[in-house]
Image (cartoon, rainbow, N blue to C red; front, side):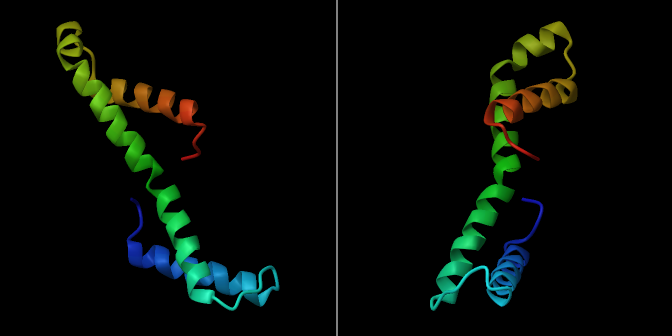
Length: 92
């Protein structure tokens, strides 16, 4: 993940604070709301990591074939990653 969990926690607190200050939300359970926002942010920010892991697994399965054909790992990584991003309709 690009950001530390502590920073994501800070961002979640700031988002919830601004939503509450601008009367977009009302809650008596502020900590629960912050926890849910933080959890959602961590999940979304770790999407690229999960996609990268899946790309590595796919390329590992084809490593012998790639070596025999002289394929460039970085180029294949980009191609497979772009396909998975399209498949999952992700925004990175």
